[in-house]
View (cartoon, rainbow, N blue to C red):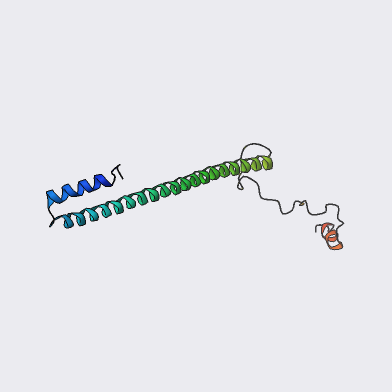
Length: 135
């Protein structure tokens, strides 16, 4: 402890006993002990606070990194979905101009649909309706 051996400690105590006196020396030692204990407590609290701050800083950096990764991921997903949507629109319309549902004409109810068989024979009722003479 500070390079002070037993002979030096005895000398310091002897000088303190002479200067301070035997009546006040115990009170001084008690006050000195309390001050040293308080100093140790304050030091340990400071070390603990610094450790907690370091842990909080590490957690904050981790959270910030996760947030940045999420933002990059969302931007990449948005760009990818926009590009995919543009590709689908250009493939379906045959050109690069986007089309809307209002631009396409409504299907004709009389026109044959791709599902119907064009060469299907007509029934007798259909034949008789079409061959009636106009009166």
